[in-house]
Amino acid sequence: MTKFSDDVTQGPGRSAARAMLRAVGLNDDDFNKFQVGIVSAGNEVTPCNVTGPELSLKAKIGVNGPDSAGLIFSTIAVSDGISMGHEGMRASLVSREVITDSVELVMHAERFDGMVTIAGCDKSLPGMLMAAARINRPAIFLYGGSSLPGSYKGKDISIVDVFEGIGAMEKGLISEDELYEIECAACPGQGSCAGMFTANTMASVGEAIGMSLPGTASLPAEDSRLRIEAEKTGKQLNYLLKNDIKPRDIMTIEAFKNAVTTVLALGGSTNAVLHLMAIAHEAKVDLTLDTFDQLGKSVPHIADMKPFGKYHMVDLDNIGGVPVVSKILLENNLIDGNCLTVTGKTVGENLENVEIPTNQDVVSFPNNPISEEGGIAILNGSLSPNGSVVKVAGIEIDTFKGPANVFESEQEALEALFNNQIKKGDVVVIRNEGPKGGPGMREMLQITAAIKGAGLGKDVLLITDGRFSGGTTGLCIGHVAPESVEEGPIALCQNGDQIELNLSKRELNLNVNEEEKVSRAKNYKLPEPRYTSGVLHKYSKLVKGADEGAVTG
Image 1 (cartoon, rainbow, N blue to C red):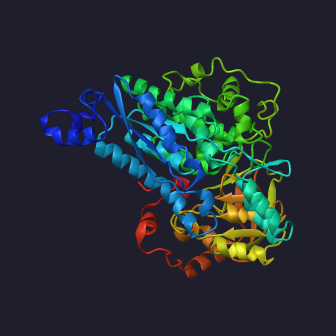
Image 2 (cartoon, rainbow, N blue to C red):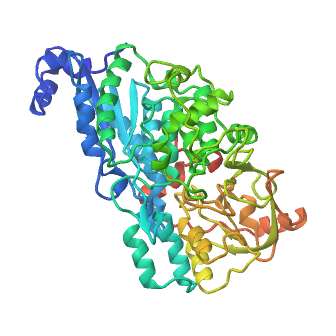
Image 3 (tube, one colour):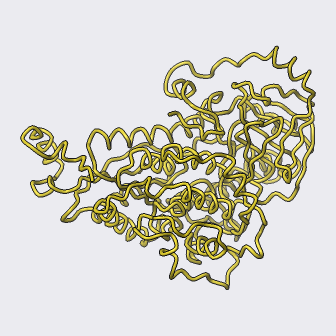
């Protein structure tokens, strides 16, 4: 294999570089070893990534040895939970690209031969996997761990309960004091959100696609086993280096299908659609919405996980974690067991000794699933001709038809809800929140949770060119493409228009005749851009549509 680090460690001409490396602790022996970058999104701005620095040190112990020397660096992370519901959320999806770019730049400049990647929140996870695929040097991924659920009045709760509580308080269903009690109980310690929200979904993807050691996706952040696995992860990177196994050797189209299947079976976050297509883009694999659509019709939903079900990630861990789900899927010929993984073994070989516990109801079996179809569906139709995404897990209806109630931003919709301007039977349309128009494609847990908290979760359909949190449940359709500023049909919606959803037909239609649409299109004016400078402006100029993963390159 190419030893990139020779560019900084070998020959008299690299004396200056070696002098700098001596200052951070390397010595003569280290200069003949593989140089390994150990990167985390560790910080204190979010509990999701608090473990990053500690796990990096553990991984470094595993990396360091006769053949490799590890050096730690870091990148940014944005907290979705803290940025939710205000302008700060526009930075969230953008941060995925910044994370990927920043890791690439350090790896390129410092000439590391391989890397250990560690992340714990929604965008840092896919950002690390995107970087690994783009750089394509031996790499391995470690999840920073999930949080444990909180407890309120004898019930397990998480951050989603706080957002729903806001809506309930605004409607007078709970008091401000009760909301405060929920707030204080919801996040008892470090780690990413407790349910099968985006972070835990993408951690599961890390395993399913073969880039993480088996069993690591479900470990709680505070569990001592995670520290042990961090060291093992570092050691395993040495194996990948010695055998020149690169991310694209692992992340094949078959591996991506395994990952999609796992997300569908778990009832995972709709954000996985964006992220998996973005990772595939970097891996040069042709993954499209059609792949999700095809698999979604044949893969059963088998995991009873929050936000729609009963269980948190720790409960899945208690029965054996993602390997148990993978074993069930493999035994039913739903995933490819021949895919290579970072262990050096195939998926099937990794699962040989995994036992499926029978005395549990966290996961079921394909012959008795929660639903015969996967937890995510792709919709087309006249309102979203390039596709849209809905989490069908937990939805009990097949059709919905009602009048459009149109808003130009999430804030407008929230104000309308709190002022009783959203009624049962409404189809709430929130536009100008797409990747380009937002910019940044904000998550809308604030409005979706508030609608549910207000008791309207089963009676209002929400449609947007933005996206949703992994904690979102109910009648919510996002990623509508083309987005509004790309003059997609969502831009032409007017109050009172009849909008119709048919899940079994996978259709989302705007029931307005073509002549009227043409007339509205002629009079359509693009909204003024929200940002005319800075990173959000640059992002809006580069980003592609949600149907392409909202990538920038």
